[in-house]
Image 1 (spheres, helix red, strand yellow):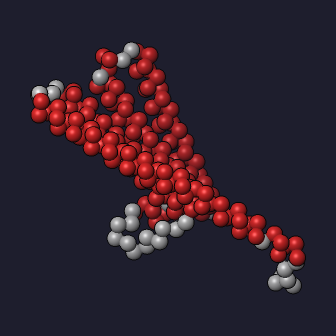
Image 2 (cartoon, rainbow, N blue to C red; image 1 turned 45 degrees about the horizontal axis):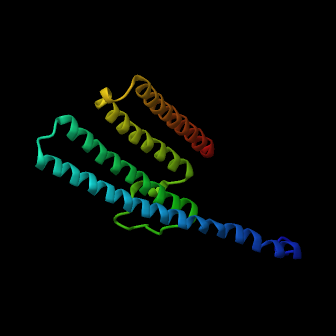
Image 3 (cartoon, helix red, strand yellow; image 1 turned 90 degrees about the vertical axis):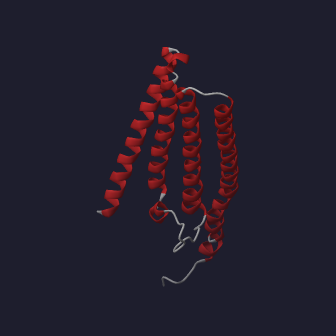
Length: 178
């Protein structure tokens, strides 16, 4: 009979339940990322106050303003990356957030899974790397040729890695449909 449970199966049932409950060990990690998010909010305001004080004390060059603004954009992009990891990771690996029908539910959250999250993270990392590379190129005279070359190669590596991750996810998703 399919409904008959042996003594061995009864003894084993708590083990899978216990293993499944270990996903809650990730909760402190996500809470730590929320604290990190607060640090980035603080960093943003420090940089913004620096920009405003620079403008009020002297007339900064366009390059100085651009570098500070790129720094602000960088902080925002990293903060966005944190939100994706916190919200998407919690929803995927810990527990449902139950945000259905909430007016502020992010559009991407309705179809997030580990593969989609990886692609989103990879593209966010490329964006962050692009900002860093742009800051370096704007201030290229302050760097040696070797540093410029390595930063460019690292950025290209991020781009190729993201393309590989996206392609792998596309193959995986299409094989699931078939």
